Length: 165
Image 1 (cartoon, helix red, strand yellow):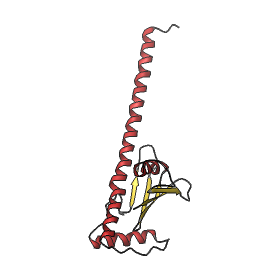
Image 2 (image 1 turned 120 degrees about the horizontal axis):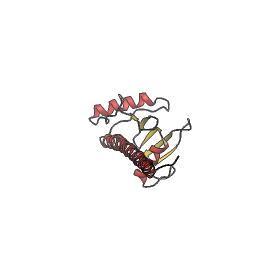
Image 3 (image 1 turned 30 degrees about the horizontal axis):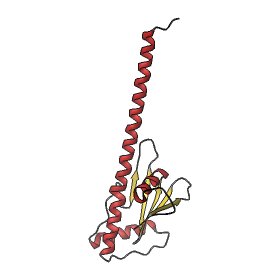
């Protein structure tokens, strides 16, 4: 059986169109994921940074942290911030200090923010999120130096990031 030139042209055009379609889909997913990362940083991390600095300037008191009372500590801090007139920023969950980041093609990240007067600790961030934040904050990725440092968490998958205020 002989393949005609017209059939070869059709097959080649299908391959080219499929390639362009796959590339457009890949680029679109990358763009959406980048915007979700940016939204997390600009709508959650930066407002928390500003709220903590404002609370500190107003002479706000800090609850006692025992090392095992993360949720109770943050609930109390959020309440005290509210009472002091500098409420914690909103989140995309029912708790102001928990953020859910869902990128296309990646597992959900449930990020817990633990704030102290001089630093914020982010639990449950992925390697990808850590890398992007470190690049935005310090200008380069280095988990040992800079304003944003981190380490691998006990689960061996997520990271714990620490932002110096």
